[in-house]
Image 1 (tube, rainbow, N blue to C red):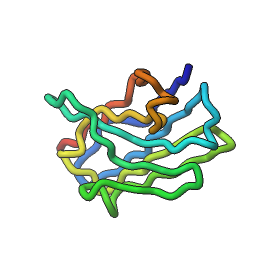
Image 2 (spheres, rainbow, N blue to C red):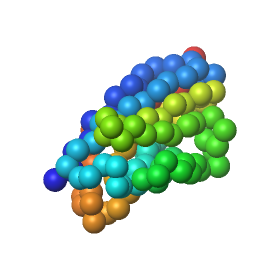
Image 3 (tube, rainbow, N blue to C red):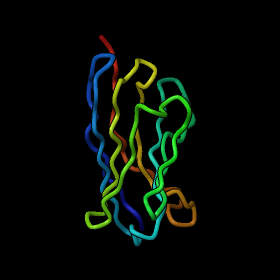
Length: 118
């Protein structure tokens, strides 16, 4: 059974920065691609924001490209999301998880709230 704990969210003004962290367990972290997702207010679905392969290759959706950076520390079973130049439309609950559904099953963590507002 996998488990993740996200942290680092908060309230920030437009243009500000936050660094999210996620500690994962229950699977061989270093062998698994990971992702950050978010669910905006009023949305039922989570959208993928950024991905990172087991080898550290990142991928981003267009709306965060150049502003967000995903990274991982396999020694600490941790994945990070550095978010810069935040916009109000980035407001959401952010979740991290294993990408492979055969690894994570139906599991999702609690997420961490990010609110961008003046």
